[in-house]
Amino acid sequence: MTERLKGLYVTFEKDIREDDAEYISNAIRMIKGVTSVNGIIVNAEDEMNRERIRLEFKRRMYEALEQL
Image (cartoon, rainbow, N blue to C red; front, side):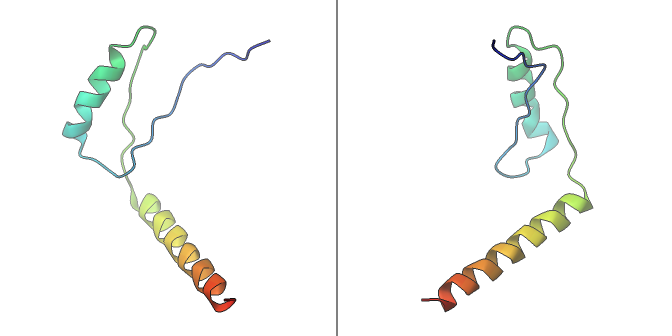
């Protein structure tokens, strides 16, 4: 039996301005069955998480290069 979905998350490859995202939001609203589209505001926690990921990636890359 196929599972049913109640929604989908859409993630942008980079943060975009709210007014620029309005065009995308309007396009998604036009899809049959879509009842709402809400934006998620970037906050300080997002920036901290990105920096931690960036540093972890660099650390792992240096470790991999040292093994060569």
